[in-house]
Length: 143
Length: 330
Image 1 (cartoon, each protein chain N blue to C red):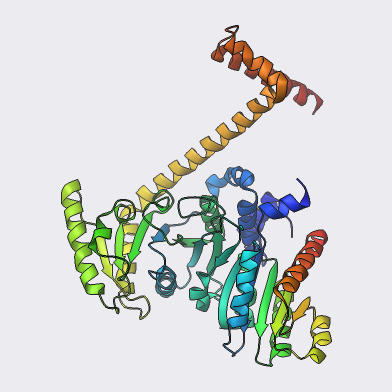
Image 2 (image 1 turned 60 degrees about the vertical axis):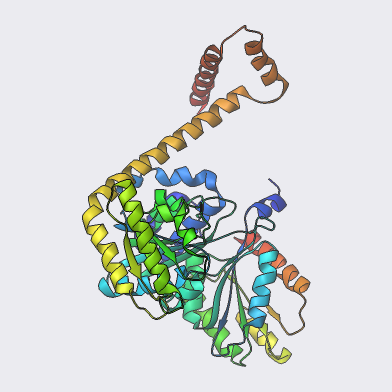
């Protein structure tokens, strides 16, 4: 079976959610929707989750990707906690991406922390899908 | 992390720090490679078993997930040291294969409780309201130490009743606003409940629906000469009536534990039988082969040179022949 067939047969699992205190979930729901329509299985956790809730959920659901939306400005601190917990739980193979109102000057720091991709306002659905597909391909080759 | 079933099973059973990850990975294997489900039957006789499998079913939006959330809280409070497993099923798109799994959202307060293991699953084309490998999922949760397993089906219409074969106890939830009393007379969903719940007791029309439900169930009981199904009037949102529902479940568990266990054994034996027959079918079909040779061979039956039984005898002979050669070289 070619890799493309294999991918078609087995849907990839993605967690989409929000950490911290901001409750603006339009972006997260939009991304969940486009991923669903692109054939992903999306586990939607909703708003105001703690980093621990996100990490434990990701492990139980055996997702390949965690996508977190942040509009509160607390992205550096919250994403650091998520990355630390994943490491602690021996689950650093899960790809983490972030989206929301994140200043471009913060992006290099987030990437250094291990965030695989950061999507800022205006990111097209096509660019999100393409980025995810190539991250997942790299992950499959690494595992 | 390994994808070897045996290693993963040992990691779950051993209670290592990787227990949860290993159990989750096993579930992914079950979902992604249904042909490997029989692997989960080998040695399963001595896996720890669940005590009670509750199936929660009902139409979309009747409050199953919120009710599941309340049930988890109530069960955890009653047995603080006991683990609970939850399987929450939502539909896959028949068009894209994607799915939006939104049941877990209502249960997020339990996400950091180490004694609660929640797994969302998409139907991936399976009909009946559940996923294909749900029985294997339950066994993995049992192996991970879950004494109680709660299965939330997809929002069902009238005919998705597979849950009856899978759960020890079926709880059917309905809520006001989903049609009049005629809906209660229809077959399928309204026949499968051990316990019926009218949820959204805080909403308009709930009391009337409950009265109609009681009337229908009373008539059912008279017609079928059996005891009346039990009922509960619940507001999951406000947590009212949930303790009564758990009381009913616990009472059933106490009365039927033995019967449930032997039924589960029987189901497992049936599963093994299916797996064995499937393996035999595949092996024979490999001997029969495909293409013109196989067609020529099968035409012998149409020409009357051999009977179907005689042909199968030949196939089996060929199969055992190749088997011996394989063993010889192995």
